[in-house]
Image 1: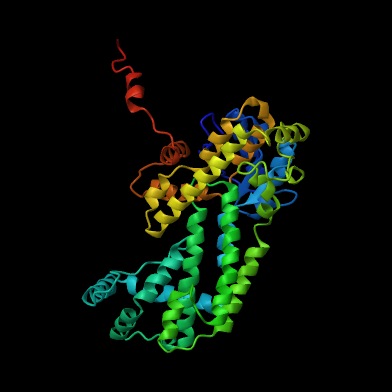
Image 2: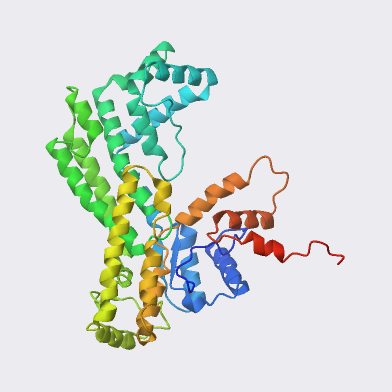
Length: 438
């Protein structure tokens, strides 16, 4: 947290050449914090990918980090990872449909001749799409996009496979087609949620609210499928209208199982909802439910007095009303841009965490404990999205065209790639001595 608001930056890229046990990771992190002269008393939260070496009760990284710091932290399993795990709760039969789709796509795309002939077929048929998509085994959006494109080109794919004497009898079975169209619609809904959970500047409360909202939507989805109306399943509805029977009970059970998986996860976020809500709605939060353990520099009695004092101060409380209205406006803009797939424009919208910070920063020092608590909560990472984004960047940096790549050069390249700071090249160049002999 800087004087200008929250900053999400890479502190260090630490190579672990030996074992990667919890104690090895903890030692490396603590050494890094010490070398960077980071005041660890301000550390209130940690988010991990949920691996055993991170979350082990005795020797996991989180447990050892808390022991080293001498205090409890708000520990979270990355909300994007948990959403991805829930998305894997499709029935085995649906998973087999996905596997066959990948097999067929790979069969078409693997050979250059097949691929060119298939693209030509799509062009001649004036198809909406000009190619298929390859499935990439990463956590996020690949699966849903592959299924959507496959279903849209299904008739052309059948024609092409027949011309190559490739027979897949499953593609003629109504049951298999029903599962395919169900997967298309359901992964589309999951992708919409996934995109909301990605990106910088999202508060942990926002991420939790998006997940809770999706759980409520799943109740609608389950009822929609059980009744056979398919208002939220356009691909499945189109198949039904083509005089195909749809096993509504089967798909209803599949949604209920996935909804149950969502309900079983995100427990650490649900437990700390009052704490996460404090920066946005300090006047409506029950102080007794706030987690004070990580905030060693905040006094609960003083915090309670400050909250009692600010309630009737219209000048200060009105700022939170204004903040809510501004956040609503940004959310509306984001939703509108998402509908038309303007993802780069979404990146340019004001960041919610910075908007919240600026509101709190306007409060006087009279409310010091409230501000410290709010700023601490704002520093919480609800996901490891930036780390995942970093791995993607590393794949580009580790190009086969590089003749040499050391730990130091990799770290420098990664920092330049992921930083939000923009260097003043003119000022930096003016500081250089062009002719060292003078």
